[in-house]
Image 1 (spheres, one colour):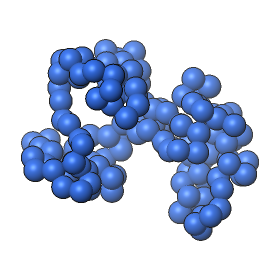
Image 2 (cartoon, rainbow, N blue to C red):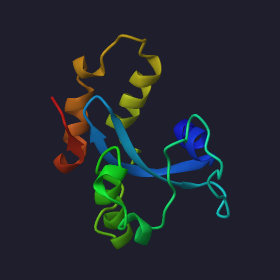
Image 3 (cartoon, rainbow, N blue to C red):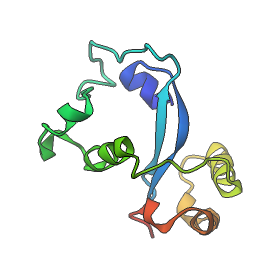
Image 4 (cartoon, one colour):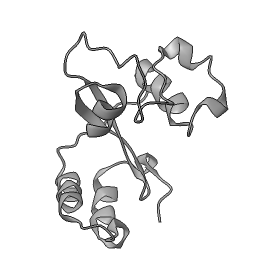
Amino acid sequence: MREVEEEAGLQVKITGLLRFIGDKGIIFLAEPVESDAVPKRVPDFESVSAVYVTLEQLNELKDDDFRDGDPQELYPSIDSGSLTPHSLEKTAFLELESQIRTFEKGQNLADTQIWTQLKEVYPEDIFFDFY
């Protein structure tokens, strides 16, 4: 949520889990806290390469306009309803969240049993670039 506020200037609430990406991160589905919120219009250090587009405009962008292909894959699937977010209210996810909060710099989440627990409760197809 902090990243969205820094980069887009929006406060959001997370509505679900979309994907785990190895040790790089987690992709969440979120929505603005305020329904009439608009992203920042003047870029700063946090948002200098960000673009805010509609789904139609997304389809007009070239592959090299993206850091990775997640937006091109995920956004149309979410819009069509073929991709629905997964619940965060699972014991394994809450344990991951707890571990992340208590980890110190230099520690590695890859060495924990949490990934085994997460793979037991979430579908296999949401895990990418895993060990």
